[in-house]
Image (cartoon, rainbow, N blue to C red; front, side, top):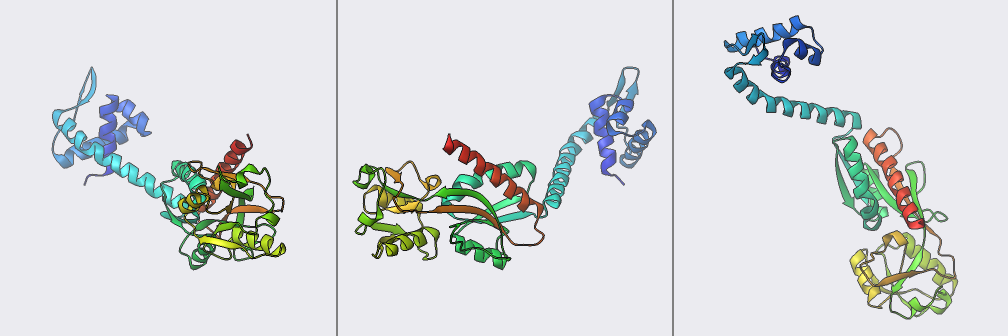
Length: 304
């Protein structure tokens, strides 16, 4: 019966042109290499190798056989590497829940770096933070990217593990050529008649910030539209139809919008990598570490 070691011996002899050098490369003794070669020749009932004073080379039949088995061995080696990488990573595929604005800034670079370390497949499920946390609890995702307000955290407790990636100040996004853009600092006391594009979810961090400030100033927030579609939000603001509360990393520079700070304290948006407590696959830990490094690089670029 043929085996992989016999195939490796034959290819090593072809590559090295010598039984001795083939034995060194394979870290075997010459008798072991000779045994594998003779067993293979006996099975096939052909001579695969010619030995002479000028060295060792494959016979025509040996060359033909080697050409057929070489790609098979290469595929077997790749399969072994794939399984080993997935075994070490703890999973075959990794599902990550993420909201779109930050996910598009952090995840592509992080996934590319992760796949240099492991062959684990990564699937990104787009959802708002509350939906991500629900999917995490149900076991539908392995980890997630979420955001909340540090001083009023929505996601806390022993059932979650959060690793902070970014802390960004909230800003008001306005049309670049609109009246509000002429102000260096906006005052919410004078913005009671401004329309806002808000998230679909009442518990979303930016909505809670806007509600807190407007009610503290004695007026109800005017809503133009509820949407989590970034292109829709940017488009509405760019046309001067309303404003939106966001952070610098979430701004799409292809739109004619600018950010302005406010006189009132808008607080921070905290972006976190979230997992369940207890043992988790190594690939999840690796992705969390990589995301931390990617976020730090982005913060350094923004600060520069």
